[in-house]
Length: 187
Ligand SMILES: CC(C)(COP(=O)(O)OP(=O)(O)OC[C@H]1O[C@@H](n2cnc3c(N)ncnc32)[C@H](O)[C@@H]1OP(=O)(O)O)[C@@H](O)C(=O)NCCC(=O)NCCS
Image 1 (cartoon, rainbow, N blue to C red):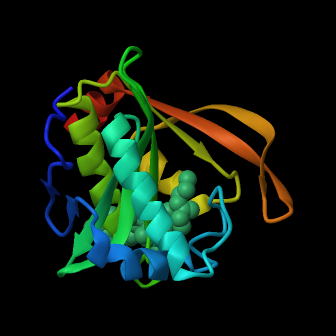
Image 2 (tube, helix red, strand yellow):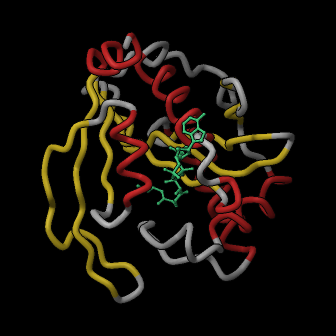
Image 3 (tube, helix red, strand yellow):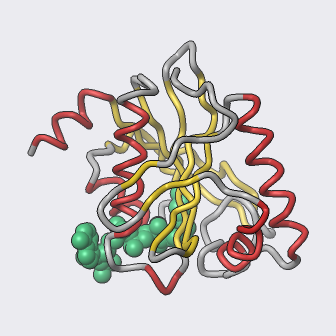
C-alpha cells in the first residue's frame, strides 16, 4: 500500500480530478446526497440535514485513518460534483468495493466513468489490489452500464440484501480483476 500521508493523493484525469474532501466541501456533499434521485439506489436514504453531511465527512476521515475506506471528492471546473470510493479495503486479500455518485446535472457526459476509471488505475496500480467488487441494485441501469463499460462482470444476484427507507432490494454482485482491467484498458 502507498497510503502513508495524512490525506489521500489527488488523482487527475482529463476532465475531473479526485481529491481529499474537507470541511469546506460539506455543503457540496449535502447537495449531492440530499438529491432523492442520486440516493434512489444508495444504501441509505437521501440526506435531509446538513449535519448528516458533516457526519459523512467525519466517517470519510475516520475510514481513511483506519485504512478501510478511501473516498475521494470528484472535482470538475473547480467544484465538487460527486464522490468515488473504495470501501471494505482488505489489504490481506488485495480487494475492495467500488462506489460512486455524481450530481444529477452532470450525468450523461461520461464524467463518472472517467473518475471511476482513474480510481481503478490507482487501485490496481499503486494500491496493488487484485480484485474490485461492486454491489448494485438491479434497477440501477446507469451504474450497471458504467461498470460494464469498464469490464466488470456479473457474478451473482443476492436476493433481498438491502433494507432502505422501507424497501427491500436485491443486489447484483460484480467483480473486476486486475488482469481484466488491464485487458480492457488495452482495447
Ligand atoms: C451511476 C452514475 C454515477 C452514472 O452517471 P453517468 O453520467 O450516467 O455515467 P457515465 O459517466 O458512465 O456516463 C455515461 C453517459 O455519458 C455519455 N457520454 C458522453 N460523453 C461521454 C464520454 N466522453 N465518455 C463516456 N460516456 C460519455 C454516454 O453516452 C452515457 O450517456 P447515456 O446515459 O445517455 O447513455 C449516476 O447515475 C449517479 O450518480 N447515480 C446515483 C448514485 C448511484 O446510484 N451510484 C451507484 C451505486 S452502486
